[in-house]
Each structure stands twice: as structure tokens, then as C-alpha cells.
Image (tube, rainbow, N blue to C red; front, side):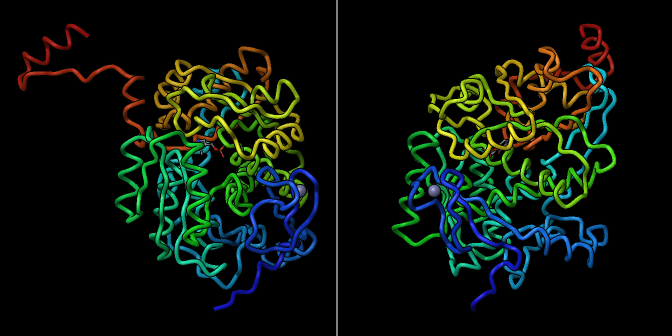
Length: 414
Ligand SMILES: *Cc1c(COP(=O)(O)O)cnc(C)c1O
Ligand SMILES: [Zn+2]
């Protein structure tokens, strides 16, 4: 079956040279090579007219409420899984602990496979189907993989997943249960990424790698669109996001920008991008103003342990456009944020999930974020995905004999 192309997409524009290509199954700009990542362009006038006819407020509470702003053919059935429209919580106790005016959390762990990545994978699987593929692949530190496996199960695609050796066991198990073929690459994420790309060419699989597939970031964008709607009268001063490849923050920045252009919000929050000290090439590029230099990685926040970020240009462009900042935090600070977010906010994030929160704390201490400002932290993934790390943030359970005396004895020692 042939599908009509997405109606409001006008083309794909190269991040480096600005050349615009027709919508189609292409990845990077032929003249700029691997780094010439393409950005989906839309006709905002026609989108505006469509939204005026059928207002957002009447629509389903999932990412498909933004159909006109997504690069997906209207002919393809949406997966049954409920992706997006994750809650935003206003948490005074966290605001007080961090010393800011207002503190919001957006809990992305509530997505079907428990991370932000479901937004991207939803678009990825539909693009695969639209372009006539039956098989889809990705390389991932974990969450992109589990979400691709889940969304493939939801749409009947066969998935092949390349994971680096150090991917946490629960994440690998999550892939296997959804029926993915899992290829554990004895090497780094970068090596897994390159091997996946070569495999897609060899076997004719659709490549879901968000670093180079132009459509994936559009799925990530939906979190920015949602923030704009969920907090429209009360836009936070800052939106805080952890950064690996840079697609998440780049996408969220684009979504917020679009809602500004569509007149749904009257100002765009500043973006704070946060990396781990052990994987901070983008922070360094932000500070130096020069091209990114790949780095080694050494952090327990596996989902952002990216030494060669693919989408650094777009990420830095969006951060700068918003008047934003970047900052790096230590693994200790990440573990601390894991406890604080859970104990004061009652949301359990994985290490990369709370890296933003750790960065927010540091940014307030450094005076980057002011005491009278408000911030929204995106908790990008659920803590149960990586119990090994969470264990490092907590003490042990207390063993107690099944008698009241036994309990009194233990309680007297706490
Ligand atoms: C992928 C991921 C990120 C970072 O997204 P990038 O697009 O790689 O910058 C942050 N947190 C979690 C939990 C992730 O899975
Ligand atoms: Zn180009």
C-alpha cells in the first residue's frame, strides 16, 4: 500500500548548509555527510488554520493530538499504546529544597516502556511502515531500544537491537520480552551505533537511530508541545533536560519554539542542558564555542554516556536560541538527586532521568538560576530500569525477626 506523505511537511533542511530536500526516506545531507542532520520543516500557516478548525483542547491526551506537527502520514493507524501527555507536577517541597520560586517535574517514566524515548519510537515505527519496511533496527544505551522493541510489538514490526556491552540487565530483558532480536556488541555505544548503521544498509532494515534519522526528533518534540499546553499561563523560566546525543533537548526546544510561533505561549523558557562529568563533550563545546570534540565516557548515568553526540549542533542551536545554559554534574550529585527527587517529589528516576534535577541544584548554587525563578525538570526515565545504580543511592533494608520483641530491638538501633 502506498501512503500519502504528511500534509504539512514542506521539506527536510540540512543543519549545516541549509539546503532543503523533499520529504522522503533520507537521513543526512548528501553534501555534508554524517553530520548534516536534517530538520523537518513545516508550513505553520496551514497548521495554524487546521488548529483553529479543530482546537487542541478537544483532542486525545497523547502525542497524536499534535498530528499536524508530526511528520507522519495520516493514513497509517496509530499504535494502541498510550504515549505522551505525561503529568507535570508542581512540587513546593522541591522548590523549597532547591531555593527557587516554583519547581515542576514532568514524569516521562509514565510512558509505556517507562522512558521519554517512546515519543521518538512512536514516530519511528510509523515512518518505517510508511516507507514500506517490515523490519526496524536501532543502537541504544537502553531506553531507545526498549521503546523501539515495545512500539514494534505494538505495530507488528520485527526489531533488531544493538546494545553496548554495559547496557543494564533490566533494559536488555525488556527488549527480549517484546520479541526483539538483541545483539550485544562487545564494545562501546559508538561502535554499536556504527554497526547498526552498516547492518541496516546490508539487510534493508529501517534505521531508528535518533542521531541521524530526521523524524525521531519530531517525536521528542512532543514533550515541548505538551509543556506549552500544560503550563500555558505559567511558563517556567527554565526547562531542564539531561543531554546525551542532544536529540531530547533539541526536540523539546523545537516544540516550545513552535508553540510560541503558533501563539499558544507568549515566551519560550530558557533551556538548561545537563551532562554527567564523565561524558561532557557538549558542555565543553558550549563553553568553547568551537566544534565538538568526542570524549571518553565514565558515568553511571548510562543513558547519557555518549562520547560522540550525533545531534550536538541542533542541541547547541536550540539552547542558545533560548538564551540557555549547559552544566555538568558528578555521579555523586546524580545519586543525591535520585534520593531528593524520590523523597521530596515521590518520583523515582533512573540516573540519567534525574541528571537534570542534579544540574538544576548546581545551577541555583552557581547563580545561573535565580531564587525568584521557576523551573521544570524532565524526569526522562523510570528508576526501576536500573536498580544497580539506584542501590548505590540508598541504604539497606532492616532484617527483623517476626516478633514484636525482634522489631523493638531493631527499632531501638535506628
Ligand atoms: C536518551 C536519554 C536521554 C538523553 O537524550 P539524548 O537525545 O541522547 O540527548 C536522557 N535521559 C534518558 C533516560 C534517556 O534515555
Ligand atoms: Zn548540508
